[in-house]
Picture 1 (spheres, helix red, strand yellow):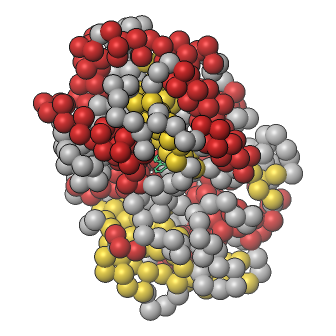
Picture 2 (cartoon, protein in one colour):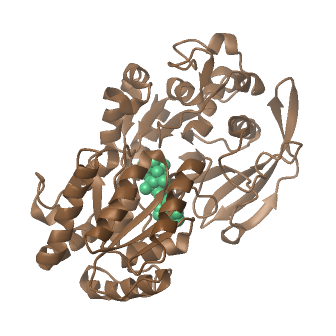
Picture 3 (cartoon, rainbow, N blue to C red):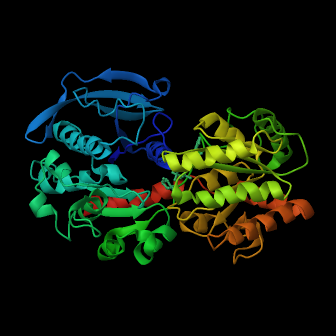
Length: 489
Ligand code: ADP
Ligand code: GLC
């Protein structure tokens, strides 16, 4: 089967968060199973070129519809760890992907609408057409819409679409002019059953458009799939998910063992596994030294996160203070696109600096993230909502015990040390319900007490986490079942 992944991100070359990891991990797993996989990505100026091999430019550029004219888009072909990639490079006046960042531009809607439209032009002109266009998040929501509205009739009638929602908090609520930009008719599409936003009839909702038009829709954990249909986590789209539940599901993410495995990770000082757990102490020492923390007997709490409202920023701040008050150490690695949230963390850093027990790194640093997972004892993830979450899975692989709120994929993957219906050999962390300071403290205090008083059971939690199966094998099998089912229909 030939699967084309259409995404705004792909690790390690263009990653802002977990979406990048998912495209990388799922694509590799599908390739290992003998499927033909191609990743379609914007050619950002910030692409990490050193990971890309054999970059060549196609002779003829694409001509992409743009209002009542067309824009040129150059195509580049390359390979990323064996997976074929096609990059879309519009060099014209807009410089859509030459902005020094993936997201956060005033014209993001226009940039990704252009990308979606270019993808269909590319597929239309290709000699080897994919069986499946697998689209991800609001940025590619127009792909299933364009296929249904225009490109099926132009000969792409054999292609099926799978649309994966990684975050319903970002729906691509845009001006209707975006529909005109890609040559769609706003009059027929701005209706309740199609792209019209449920909260504002004048706004076009690209994610909703994708949900309605795609052949299959899923989110990245079963629990989040339930939450967005049945609670306000659906962020206004609950009834849309319910109306389309016949083609909707939840498939839990995996993590890529070639990137996230303490036994083979060359970004950490010393590799270790369940049988050589004491070696984690060497990484802990290195983490303290790199972060300027005192070498003590205190446990180290970690936070590795986009600092977005979704992640429970007020609870993260409270967790930092609570950890320090309880005689622990804490390291945070986080970055934010939101100036207000950035300012809050800058102020907290200024207040706490310098400290032998605390270091806040307000930046994005892939290498440091590996060291933190390897060196910390516990990781805090007090999210208000979490479609899947990868940081708890990565942390568990590195014997760092997660403390999480019971939402979305966190609830599906972390099982409380004391209060769980799971057997003791799979309990792997701490879980709390209320998104309040008291809720967070209840879980943190239990974890600290166990670390201090029952180190044997704490060690067992670490080993249970390390032994968990978070590989892409099972999720890839589920996606393949979906693809095969769609191709039969
Ligand atoms: P989300 O996609 O919502 O940000 P996930 O838990 O799914 O959350 O994935 C986050 C990914 O981004 C993980 O690979 C994590 O290690 C990485 N990450 C998050 N913040 C940073 C940061 N400041 N520096 C380096 N890596 C980060
Ligand atoms: C999103 C979600 C996160 C998920 C990731 C990958 O960014 O916030 O929960 O793990 O996508 O699917």
